Length: 122
Image (cartoon, rainbow, N blue to C red; front, side, top):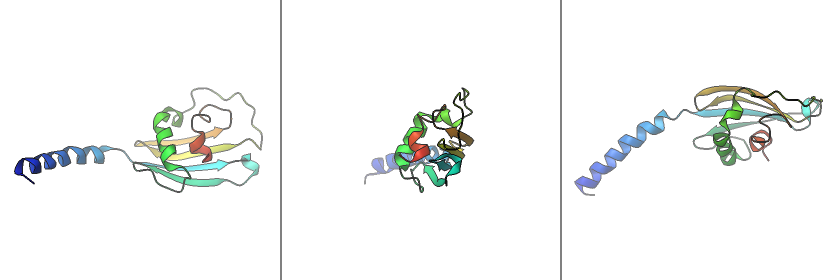
């Protein structure tokens, strides 16, 4: 390696290292009730950057969350569907992009369709 290429390599490391360290960690706990509150829940962990955890589709879920991060915040519209004990439900709790997340979802309500893979694993 020449001196010039070694210097360029060190410069790249100096620029990439801080950028990677500045990226906030994302760690979520997803709980899914396929048959509503009358059934047993399934719980997964999901970490992004890199995608990992017990979630059945971590890479796709991380990409989906990146595209639909607004669905992790407070619901912008109220759900007009009446809940039943057997309506599928899910919760997401944890940290996304350095921000605290705690939100509940019901099938057919805002956020469910966009985050379906994250919430149901399918």
